[in-house]
Length: 153
Image (cartoon, rainbow, N blue to C red):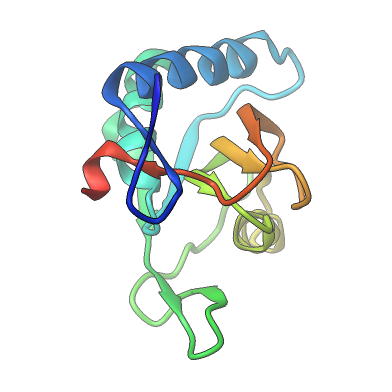
């Protein structure tokens, strides 16, 4: 169930989170063309999702990598490669994960970085804004602002 918060946004409860997680894991598992062996979690909210998905699809924790993200003065998010560099992604199928996506630009940038380093990548979020760039795997599309998750409050 989604609950309204003070910003007239919704909050994804723990039960709703589990439901969304189940939906997106099923989509990943039924994709016969892409079998991820590595997860790249975006620090904007991808860590809790990445850990849960990795465990359920059998990716070892040593193959779950987090990458820092920062917000500039205009509100745009960017990958911060000053702390972590991906290195060679050849022969890797990398699943890029965030909890939600409004415009889809950040997940698209991360997929491109993996591809530029020789890997194959797909993006995954639990909730995506209907007017943004759609990820490869998404559990639910939202009409307005993507909701906050229970751990953000």
